[in-house]
Amino acid sequence: MKEDPLTTCRLPLIAVYRIIDANANRVREGLRVVEEVARFVFEDEKLVLTLKNLRHEVTELVNKVTSPTELSSYRESRKDVGKDLVVDNGWRKKDLLQIVEANMKRTQEGIRVLEEFCKVIDEGSSSKLRKMRFEAYSLEKEIRQKIAR
Image (tube, rainbow, N blue to C red; front, side):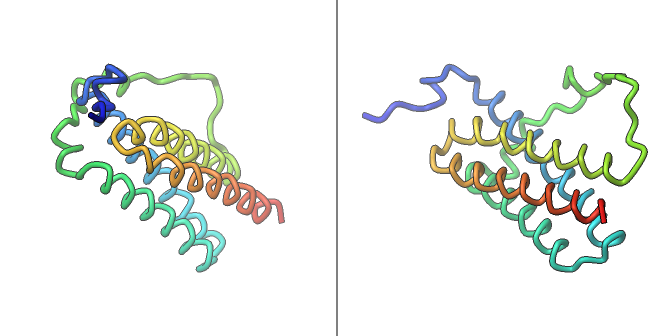
């Protein structure tokens, strides 16, 4: 008999879904910001499509692991203990490079979290998310080079 991964890892199902929901949103938001840079600053249709496709791939994969309805049913934004936490390290995004870096890091970190928690429900999702994360690393490098020109 196959063990239930949620029982085996002793994670409450609601926590897993909330983590997946928060990080799927984080990834989509980060990619969308950079997509807008590619669209309106670089006017690079190929890069826009690449970023858009990655955003949609993440969404599709998460939707295969669990449904959007299920994720949103566990969302507790008002009760989220992290929603009002602000780290003031004196660093403010002042230029295009900093905006892109911050949003690509947000994307990469979110995908990494999704790798860990989606595999609790669907082991096959981890390798796909890993490929997406490495694609995000490559895209960050490509965009940094565009900014440096």
